[in-house]
Length: 423
Image 1 (cartoon, rainbow, N blue to C red):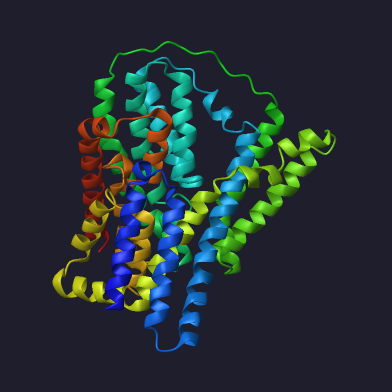
Image 2: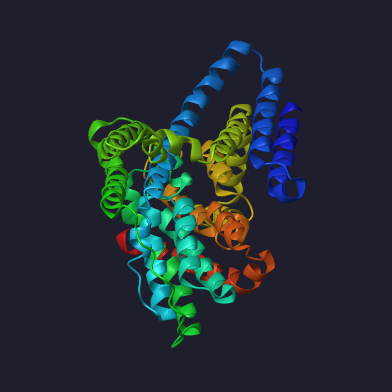
């Protein structure tokens, strides 16, 4: 009975998150209330408070590892942005051909989202499109391609998506294996929609915009390449030291703090603060961190109560094929945010069922990462781009969803062919 109440609270909370704009209540608030209430009901149903408390603290340790990793990554990106580091990328684009620009934007997004994350990359590249393309009716096509490319790029990197980071920290995947197994499928997800849109914009030009002048080009270069270099080295650090990835991220943040402080040592206190990590920590989106905290708490309550185990048993008994299971989860991620979805999958299937680097986890990373592009609210990158460019939900559904779905199916096909060839 109490398990049913936990499920009802979780579903109600999720519905509240889905209609955030109508409720005019931040999704972080709904997620936090949902997470705490789920654990409250579980405590009432538990036979031993001490055991329940031990389980809560165990889950909290795993959640904290994810949150500290995200906090460090978001802060480093904010420091780079405050130094106009990303303008180095935008200012290097001079083409007036729409097809060339579309290819450039897509390739840069795909690569950058694997190094940073799909949300940050979507924000940066959407801003880039806004600077380069004045007509909104053309620009939203480019931004839509940014959403597809950002989610595809994030799916093959342990740093590229919150969900791949969760799978990495949770021990389901390792960096080298996820890159090898999902890079080609990730490329396929992008290439098919890109080719279709290239034909749409063939031989079309756009008006060139004024070039932006970097205020501190030397400092921007140093901060950009330091930040990207540190982020790339985190998986290497984790592999050699066997420390959890969040420890590497905290080390990277500390080094970035030293570098940014030394760069502005001779400036006045007000200007030093403008470019400091302390200011970046104030600027990052803490509500997103709290949203992840609430959702992951709620999912962990479902796990401890045995709900996810029962779902796993049902799935194993009734859906025998792991690829069908993974594909269904991928399509579901178009409707449900992939963070709680993957957290639920982690709770449903233990490492005893699917050990580290099992093909199931890699397939889940691909499908849940790229399936969110099918509907614009299906991913954090889509929601961010929608907010910046005010893209209409139904315009995206009519014009882009079918492209994203074709790309999604292409990625699955290449993944299956790759598995077939490699045995």
